Length: 137
Ligand SMILES: [Zn+2]
Image 1 (tube, rainbow, N blue to C red):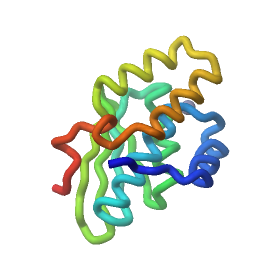
Image 2: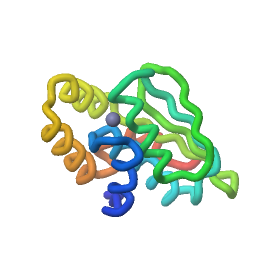
Image 3: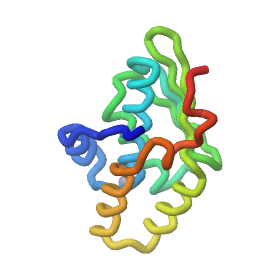
Image 4: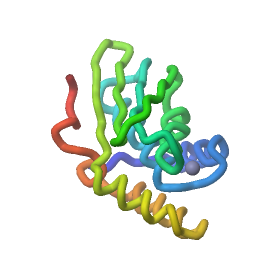
């Protein structure tokens, strides 16, 4: 399944965050996927290494969700959501994806970073997220 990021939402995220990069798009996709799966999320907790580029995903999530987002420091990149109806969902980004784009980010020129962002936008949910967590709790 492919979670599409509408163009106007992508532009809103870029103006909020200041630049377009892969982790911003990962955040957008996590928020959209949660919304599509359990309904409008009212609570969200992100676990991420406490530095850039990982934290860029928080602004992506902020663009999609109206509720408050809390951020916890951790090794992996994941997000827990609770919807208005009480359903919960956990999305964990595959370690291979996190590593791939974090490593590329380290030495990428600006344009390369944008290209990575479009690559993430075109990636399927199965490519981005751990399968066993792509479900309701
Ligand atoms: Zn960023």
